[in-house]
Amino acid sequence: MALANCRDCGAQISTTAKSCPRCGAKPRSALGALATIGKAVVHVGFAVVLIVTFIIVFRVVSSYQ
Image: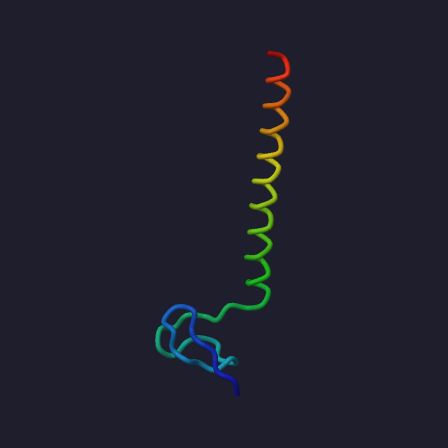
């Protein structure tokens, strides 16, 4: 039996526990962590697209002046 820290209260709980006995928080699943990473990648990708679009538009507009 391995122990891990609860994500909410920090108490050590079993990795097989359905919830923390101290605060009742449910442990994160690997799929939930992967979804969080995927959302972060989407947000960063969207920011990159906006920045590149802004740079292109700025260069086009400044070339007409």
